[in-house]
Length: 193
Image 1: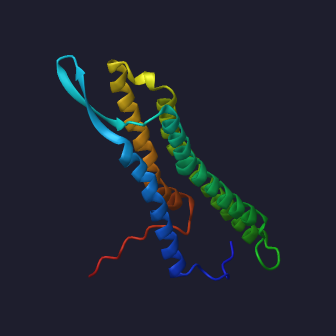
Image 2 (image 1 turned 120 degrees about the vertical axis):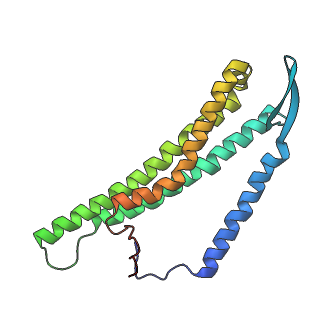
Image 3 (image 1 turned 90 degrees about the vertical axis):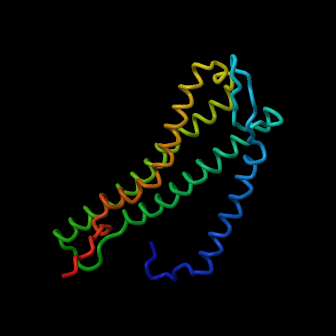
């Protein structure tokens, strides 16, 4: 948005990355503290159930709500805020110099394409991460769903699918940038003769 403004320094980037890691460690250690594998009799077999064993339903519910807010709502709010600001600034911008119909038409087309790309990035984050958050909330508020052994297999498959979908968001952004931005293109290295 401000190409002539001073860039973020390396020290600030290092501080930001360190802060992210320092905030992530306590969040992950909560799960490490409460995740255990416990043996259960299942017919004539002993099966181990590896899950989080919380001291109370209130603690589990509070943790899950905090995780949804921190992992989903906070990043989505940041994306929406940043991309809305960029889109609004870009939409109001006019090309410099005297009006030229052909140049203005090309500029308008490129501007719309960039705004479309921003919208697609936000939508992909929303679509990829929402099913996992909904599944986790349903699991927290309806633990009886896992009581039926036949339903457990289906729910495990659903859990694997929503996890895969959430993680797939990481590789989608470069693809979106490549196809929706003319200036972001992969250039194959030239073969040496």
